[in-house]
Amino acid sequence: MTKILSGFLFFSCVLFLASCGSNNDDDNVATGGTGPGQEEEVLARDFSTRINNNLLVEGARCQGGETTTYDGVTYTCDPGEWLIVLDNMNTCSDDGQCTQIAVPSIVATLDDTDDITIPEYNYAEIDPESPVSEKQREVINRVYIRYDMNGVTEAVER
Image 1 (cartoon, one colour):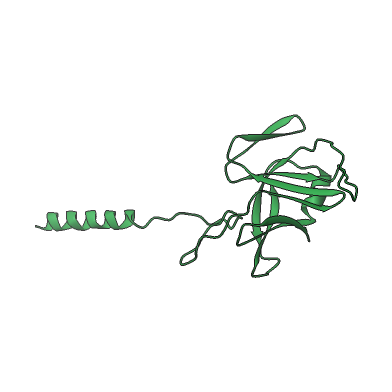
Image 2 (tube, helix red, strand yellow):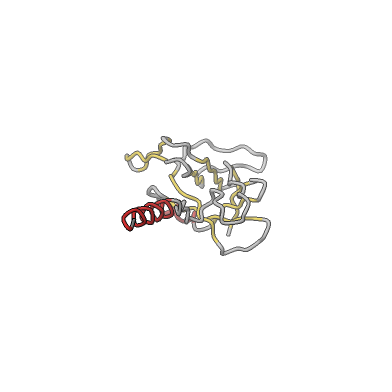
């Protein structure tokens, strides 16, 4: 009888422990993660923002397999990461005519920040996963990606 009771207790403990899983979703990135009792947040969406005549910031969420090249090395963008273009090379006139120099993208994540607390918006910093030039780093340090509960997403200066 003791063996049966011990076996039953062991089996019950195993079932209990197996049911106590975790989704391990600790990252607070601009992907709409939720916590207990919260509704799912709207995701940041692809965006293109001309901040001024000399700076365009664009971002597209990767599905997986997208690539970019930096200094002759190809980098692959995983699902949920972003391809970001930091175009401070092309200039636009006030009437909308822009130069057409090709600007390579970078692979990055968007990491939510608490530096700014405005209830209507979430702000994210660009966190490069592929190498960036010094000029790209300067742009990254000057902008946030802002998105609201409707998914409206744009780059804004800090």
